[in-house]
Length: 497
Image 1 (tube, rainbow, N blue to C red):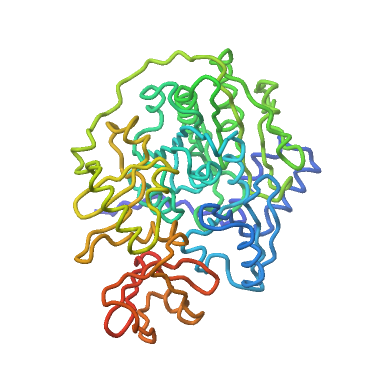
Image 2 (cartoon, one colour):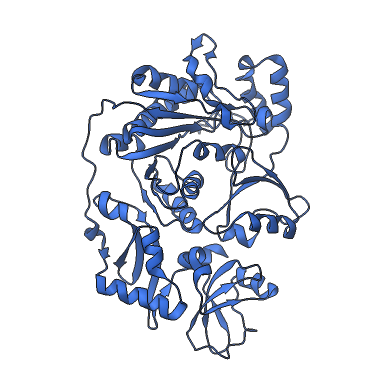
């Protein structure tokens, strides 16, 4: 009996795949522009990062530039974003600041969506991120609101939730929660609840720039059509979820018009009396308008108000984004969301007495004003097993029945010595701990980030089992250390080593 063999289709080389992808876009550009595009996509993209205003500032960025021998170029549409030429210095992915969440490595084009929102940091309201993982754009929204507004970060894929959770933990976000549902359902579950919504839609990734996470590959018309149907459903869900006057940003990392202007055009034709496109061209250093024609397919003239980032225009990966404003109510068949009382997950709100005891311990041991932080960020203390958490008030008051994957931040863990502040809390708020903090020498700090205990640390003057807040010579909080008889024990989470 002959063994059946599968038909093996030879894989295209990276260069051939890129060339085949490029041909899809030749009809959309003049011959001069297409030549520029061909040349641009062959050039390597510089890495880029966006710094974390919850943990650092521009003065620190300037310090990194000198210390790590970087050449920085400001990204014109993102005040916290920089391209980095690190060829003569430390790779941007190999610093303590990166590992500890002082900045997030992100392609420049991906910094555009969150910048399109109008956000008042003093009153940011509620934000929904329908397809949030791995979390880069979610952290950008958190940064723009200075963590004062609640963000519900949703992703439909269970396998992508752990990455989202880690990114938000590392960023130090306290006013967030993570859910795992099909984004298409959220608009009907929570109609006109949110002030803004982001849908960075799953797409064919035809951005014409290769990366480690995905390489160029041809996409069939069937695949693109299937994606566009889901993208349209997600965009409609986002529009249903926001209040009248609320904003929705729709974005993709593909340049295929069927997934970009085609999706927005279809939604405008269906809900044009309730939605309008906002002109975001003035936010760019040079025009990058969306298409109004794709072969024989005509799109609404308003689509010139959207942004199509051809790589040769601003030196980015290919990208599409637009801002829509909801101007009137939409027909929505409201549905009841799934329900699971918070108590069934093992969480319980701390009593007033417990709160006062915890607040007093932080004040006595670390001279840290926990109550001030709870009030500033509208947080509640919640306990589960041997851990303490801070939950956003929005979770407790508006989403307490929604099954969530996680919320807020772990504050502390129980130990024989009392509550030990978590690494995440110390990384975000450690600069406010006025007692039991130490600064390591440079070599000690390097060893610390390798996960090593410090045997050359003098334990005299400290009590055994005492917890210390550890920083490097530049003031970067590295985490927590525990005083033992002969060393300072390193409590850095293993994922950061």
